[in-house]
Image 1 (tube, one colour):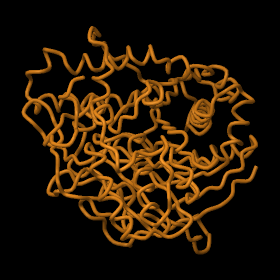
Image 2 (image 1 turned 90 degrees about the vertical axis):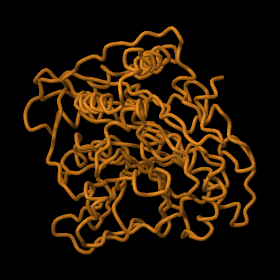
Image 3 (image 1 turned 180 degrees about the vertical axis):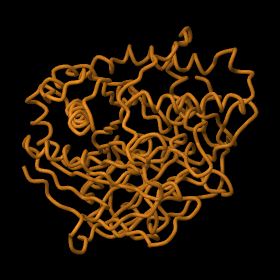
Length: 466
């Protein structure tokens, strides 16, 4: 095994992984690609215990102790000895992670009443790795609260030493040595710029039973991810300001851990695309879309196909032509590549499935949420996470228009999926908002650090009626 891919204790720096390369290059002064994984507990958080839990699990996750730095040829992570401290949440969701001027690693832990959140810079880890981290944090938290948590495969334990397969660049570890780089396909799908609003974060959660959406998806012979993908396509066709002549393309990340049998805690996903061509029609039915995309994710998720794809990406990064070029020049090229990639799909849907945690920990969890940070290029994204038989599907972005989300959840309700919706937008003419377990923003000008996100609006929640 290549030890130079590792972030095991004792190493003072480690290279960014294959997927993190674009995120590292694309960052701006007041923006970097962030996301959050949250759980809503059944009781209020004890901050002191959460702080101790975080400090005790950090040696188990050496790859989370990184700060992004720019080298002469590539960016890399510098190990920091600073231990993060959980913060009570008063500010903006998924605000940019400070990458300079701090000794803290490139993630944060937040709490508010019953909510615990881990927000991560995407170069450091993906949603799957962050979910593993949060599960370990909660396991240690409840152990310190006096509970006995039986050891099982659902959480990494502080007593165990980190493994090299957890902390290495999994793309390089699994890539075929003889792979050839490929020229990316150029696509121009429908791309709705939307009305992106500065200083604003619009989050809409829809929570429903996993069995209900599974039953609805089975009517069309679809998986849950295929069902949501088809519904996203249908809603874009229905809510577009004019008939669409370009393809509607949904980018769907595939978790390579489950497909290739590893528990890596950095980035290890592959982005695939599911497209549909409306050809200028406005009468496209959901059933027609479902029939077109049925089985496509299964085919593209074949481990042999995925190995070929990630091997080609690794080969491109390790090109002998690219290697000696200074990072200042590489970064300009990579930043342009990232921007083109963001314009090559209509939106993205990230479904991390069921949150793994020991049963004794899951007993304390009411629901789990996956919230994608916004980008300068997309009006909104969509993500989902499940626990204890309930899925929360979240739209997040920087526009106030709710037409799309309304159409989406109304279709689900009409299709036999009762949905409970929470939003951080106050409905026009409504009374005072219903209290949720999210903090409300202070009414002030956003800080420079959080200026791309904006304050939270007051929230409301409701049931979607069929």
